[in-house]
Length: 308
Ligand SMILES: [Zn+2]
Image: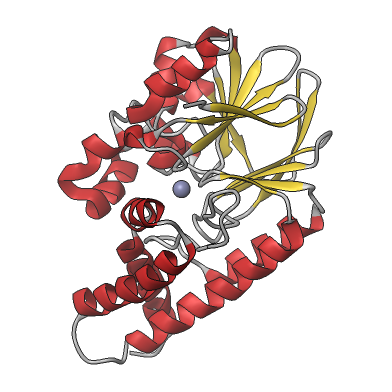
């Protein structure tokens, strides 16, 4: 199984094979001409796979100069602290609202534990604090020059309040984390990851507008891989967000409790997923994507806004 693929000139995709599975989490490795930069290295539980993939292509952790984080969720950034511990010169770019939670991950871990419970360690591995001196907080609007590579930074909240995206100027590749949803390259099912606690649909729509303004040639999705039809992809993402949030809003006034409403949501989305994806992929998608959490994230969004 080949875990490294070329996305564009100077950009490789590494499939970090989360829990041994392909097509779950993609890290991007950028050759800056003066060392490497990695966008979203993934969780600590798959760090060995990321490093093995680097080594298989003749590179190593000591060649990496920068980590560019879209946000601090463990599936994107969990390996950050462990990487800095092994390579103390690493510079970590992250939104200013996320930076304090990398330096002291207590709250981040408490939030993740509410979702994953006893499975936290098995899924994401060890979460090591990042020394504040390694952190370079971003606000959005920056233009980074890393070696010969120019990157624009945009603040793209909605999925998370501290989410940023990066545009690799010379290739028109936009690293969008979770902002443009989850879709395995080549498959047609797109869905919005909407876990608690930050989901904000208005901010999310504005972030999709901001991504559209970049007129990128491709989006790079952490889950999973490049999407080359940018406009239709963003349009579908807008539609799917409305569809899902309407569905969750309607479910709030249905009989039963949250557990049964979430279960019904998972059942219906699961049916759609199985119509669009091969059986083994559909199963991984349903498990890995945490569809249940998507209901809870949208329910929380509505309950903050609707009259009781
Ligand atoms: Zn994610």
